[in-house]
Amino acid sequence: MTALDITLISLAILALLGVIFEEVIHVNKAKTTLFFGTLSWMLLFLFSGGSEETAVIGTGLSESIAEIAGLWLFLVAAMTFVAYLNKKGMIENMIYLIMPRHVTERRLLFLTGLFCFVFSSLADNITATLVSCSLILSLNLELKKRLQFIVLVVFAVNSGGVSLITGDVTTLMIFLAEKVEILTLLTLAIPASITVFILAVLLSRGLDGTVELKANTNEVRTVDAVIAGLFLVTIIGTITVNALFSVPPVLTFLFGLSIMFLVSRFMSDDNDLDPILEYIRVIEFETLLFFLGILLLVGMLKEIHALDSLVAIYDVLPPIYANYLMGIFSAVIDNVPLTAALLKAGIDMSPAEWMGLTYAVGVGGSLLVIGSAAGIVAMSKIDGLTFGAYMRYALHLLLAYSMGYGGVLLLGRFILA
Image (cartoon, rainbow, N blue to C red):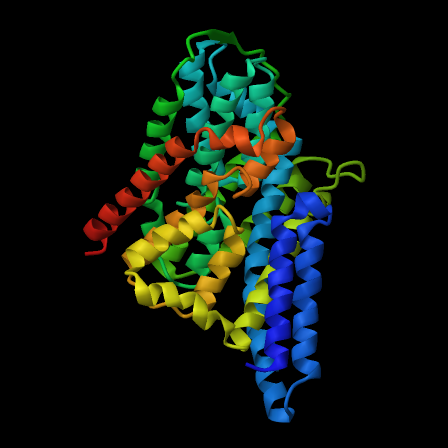
């Protein structure tokens, strides 16, 4: 191993530490990963061994940029839809439309889990968590009951995202790497939803009261309803045309986004006070920049063959056990770089085993409150939700995760046998 390799690996470790200790150092993880990601490639070019090596590095960078571009464009399209619907109050309206006005705490816990599971598969898990936190805070529950609700929210949000490419970035990454088929992913909703229900049963102990929900609906314009319908049609269309004609999801979603722009232009004023294109600017570009930095770092590690050691666990353990451990590991280390590294490492697994990994890295982050974006967002919104308070439910979460993973393995044997 050369001095340059050691330096580049050290930069990747520093970037990872920056992500883990973001709340301590008060530096946004997007800034950290983007800095170290671009610096590492700069060093690769500056200290290359000659023109031939420079050409190889250039090819590797081009491949990484192409992968990042596909992921970025898909996320931009999906997040623009969600940003628009959230700003127009459509998501909040949906909650108060399906939730009863007078309900027991136990029943509300199950309804909240169901909402989080379904909504997070259609939209991003951050939005689903924010909406759910607002609902929980409006109930004025005592701290213990509030924690029971939010623990279920974090697990349900992460579980819902694994079955659709719109719901979780790691699911999208594994699909774009052609490790699983889009229709196969949909079947993950079966074991994932069952374990959300099981966790709700475990957490419902002591929820014996009743609550009143205050309706807070917003006026719905025709154009907003049409765009909400267009969003659902785009998701269904993405799955359908990919399964039947192998149309890349990014192309279908960009097509749906273009129709959204045209619908807004001809069904509303689309004036300077609220232009439809402005919603591209309000999506979370910090998240996108974080993905950019992470994928640059992982691409660099692949270029210097540093990912070979990550595969070592798959040489020692069968993939079904290694994948399970990777899910637990994703609760400590962000699942995006972990998934990216596994994909780049060239691990050879069957489609059923890739299904297991998809579930593991998508849901495993729920085991710790810092293990997923949903948990971190919940910590910032719910007073009393600390690392220690969340850990009280660690056994419940580990049991639900383990049962879900086992269910995915059984499912894979049946549908991919």
